Amino acid sequence: MPVSYAMQRARLVLIILIAAVFVSGCVVSKSPITGRKRAYGYSWGQEVQIGKEADPQIVAEFGLYEDEQVRAYVERLGQEVLAVSHLRRPETDPEFRNTPFTFRVLDSPVVNAFALPGGYIYVTRGLLTHLNNEAQLAVVLGHEIGHVAARHASQRAATQTLGQIGLLGAAIGGQVLLGGTAGESILNLGGTAAQLLFLKYGRDDERESDELGVDYSAQAGYMPSEGAAFFHSLKRISDQMGGIPTFLSTHPDPGEREQTIIRLAQRWEQGATLEVDQEEYYGLIGGMVLGNDPRQGFVRGGVFYHPTLKFRFPVPSGYQVENQPSQVVMIAPNEQAILLFTIAQGAASPQEAAAKLTAQEGVKVVDSGAATVGGNTAYFVLADAQTQSGEVRLLSYYVQYGGTVYTFLGYAAKASFSTYQDVFLGSIRGFDRVTDPAILNVQPTRLQVVRAPRTDAFRTFLPASLPDQFTPEDLAILNQVELDTRIERGQELKLPR
Image 1 (cartoon, one colour):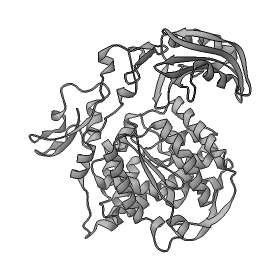
Image 2 (cartoon, rainbow, N blue to C red):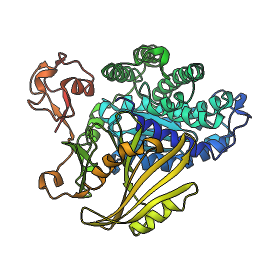
Image 3 (cartoon, rainbow, N blue to C red):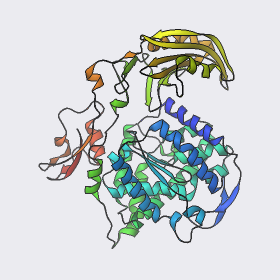
Image 4 (cartoon, helix red, strand yellow):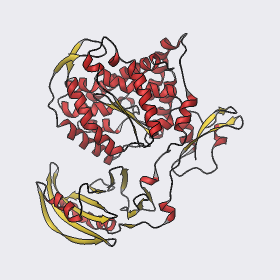
């Protein structure tokens, strides 16, 4: 999935918010892996606190996949792999051994996994549907546990001038998918020299975590070479995106990592009986949401619809849309203006929500007053605000609908705001109720596991009509096969329902 301006900006805000809590310094502490002392940017206690502070914001941005069976499965497997890691060994210091870990499944279709310092591990539902067995998930979880155990984020923070920013960037940058959006946010902060410095540490961290992921999954009883097939899938996904040159990636090339996994796994698999566990895994992911979930909002014909909350509004022509659990971000084609739509948290009325904005330091009200939007009570504020990038003008509308106050916030540089004001108003004043049953009753595509009724090429088992967001190649990648791969009768396949 291409990295968007909005996603980069959202993660950069998160990084700055969390990093500002701590003052970076040099801490000499033991490595849970080697037992030797070395310099870190933060104490272990600070790393745990950073993870605790950042976790609610990660959850707010992505949302949790609300399936207790899936959550419990990932938690159980995560704890199994964690139990054989360096963080749980008898010789390890109690401060590491006694740190609880949290494993979460994020409600995102993006194929991704990452770790925060101090024991917070995240996988997306998109990643789970692209894995073929429990062994592959064990390798992924072992990889992320490895980032925490090696204290990669804190190591990097100790070597960077902007230690606070580098820390969380390194933490979220520890992602499975090449070119993770959070890591790229950090790299975009500096020039080429600073980027290359980040890349050097990032690649070494990833290679070490790949090795730890193999070791931990094998020690937990799983066949680590299975992870190679998943990294091959990542290479195919990367190729679909247009690819990212190896020398400009925070991660080693997925093709390189595929071969590394095979090489590292050999020493564990010779003469050993290790598990793959595909049947149980397929039983878990059958029925999971596949791709984007329209119940959480979607764009059709230039209109954003939210069937669950029963509202709609037009999207400005040409604007890129990022639909996140906490907000809808619409970015102008030239990226010089943004329109946000979100819920006004803790506000009982439009006036109360507006008052929170106008009370902020540095906000100068130009105009304000009562309004009506789609037959609903509303209040608007036109104001100027000073930012590090210069003075901006913002237009905010607060709309009372269905017992909730919703916020539209459009902003651009003050000098160019007039260019965008009518565009903002077009979307805001188009906010209205959804009554179309076809919209209200829309359902997500779900994954179904079926057995091939015959022996034939994979492409012959694809439905005649695919959901809009999927191509035949997407489904081949989902199954870790090629379109012309020979599928044996009775072999299980993952297909959209």
